[in-house]
Image (cartoon, rainbow, N blue to C red):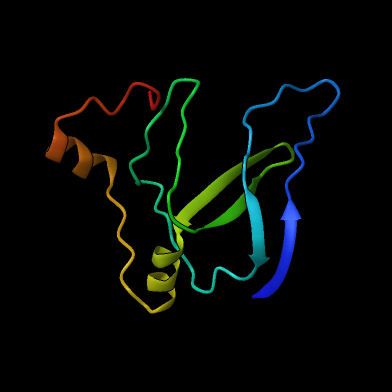
Length: 111
């Protein structure tokens, strides 16, 4: 990892609308280090506007580009990143497993 100090500046296209705000300070940059395969059957949640997630430990973030105008964020604790790079198993729950375990309606947006 290369030590650096960076602030994040949000840029919104002239005709666009902001979809999120970031509030963080980048300590340094590095590599993910290990592949993560996310199955198309992975369970996801659809959240209403205002969704927030706050971490109280050091985190690692990977920005994933989707098409020309979209991104996704993969965020984990630094400890999770260390575990990933130590070869610990990555496990993702499918929607079918989630519905069986928690009995939740899983098809609202997938129809």
